[in-house]
Amino acid sequence: MKSPVGTYELRGGATLRVFADHDDNDGYGLEITRDGRTVRYDAGHSAREVQAFLGLFT
Image (tube, rainbow, N blue to C red; front, side):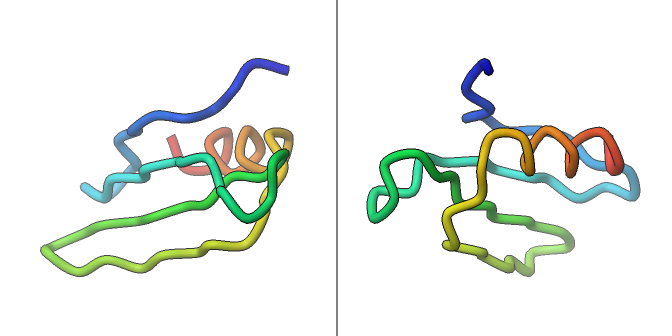
């Protein structure tokens, strides 16, 4: 599966940044920003999980 690392525009004006999770070689972290506020999820999400998230919110 293609690496989902990158920045994506979400519905409602939020931005999702997907980054490689250095603590989990196969995982990805998520950072969602909207209106100057940021929430970060460092857990080792799989590429499949990230793709599902993007399918729901982009």
